[in-house]
Length: 347
Image 1 (cartoon, rainbow, N blue to C red):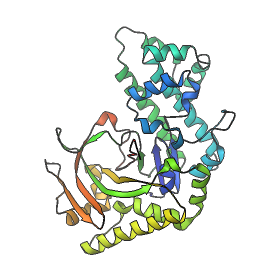
Image 2: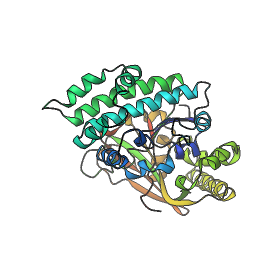
Image 3: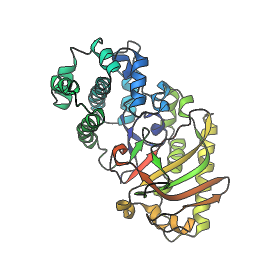
Image 4: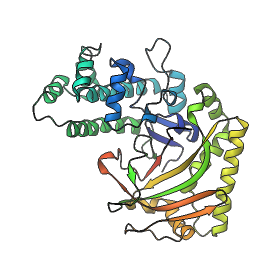
């Protein structure tokens, strides 16, 4: 797996703090600008399952002052490919298509969209971007037996296939996923049988991406030492500690936290108390280095059978390990590893 890059579902700002290359697929703001009443659009996005933090404008790639295009400098810095502008323009078009589809699925959204400037542009946009007939989609929405959930699920699969093709062409084929939209959509083995494993470090003072301007973030990305220190903490669960003593693993985690803290102090970055978590698919445990040492560190075996999990205090933080239930319909990909971004609603 290529750990230099990340495919970001959702606001890419925080992913940019930790990974050298970021493939930014963003379904949130500022696309509400294109679709009529922003308040109506925000309500539809939240109804579709997007958390309020995912719609925070401070986390999204800003647009130019004339609102015509996204900031090319930021996009180039994240993707680091020659055709970054073309790729992101296509991602933007896919994003707008998704926003239109969400709009069509509610009466208020449908009415708002029909009054927007995108009514005449939609047929070409859908055919050129996703090879779909927009007029046929409108006919489907108007049918008496229309099921918005099934419709959105079908469209999402078509959309993700196109995104996957773009990501592969951009050199992100073997990169993990940063999943902002579904961070709060897994249950820690309470009612349904677990189908995945999770590992989490609780009690960290992590950098608050909402408090960093994009200009400063780009400068931090140029600072190889600081950027590496932040990435090393995020990639703790990817480290191969096989054969190492428990004390070595604990000391290495504390060392990573210390280097992370020094980097954020040097850049005078605001922080917020948060967790660092990953969800791992059982069939891909062999490819996950932590599978060889987490059981040793926590005293809990790798099993999907009902269990309480385990928590181990290491310095001032708590390392938790156990199993979780992840809803398949909410899992936007089948990558072995999903990094979860769980920004709190309040600092």
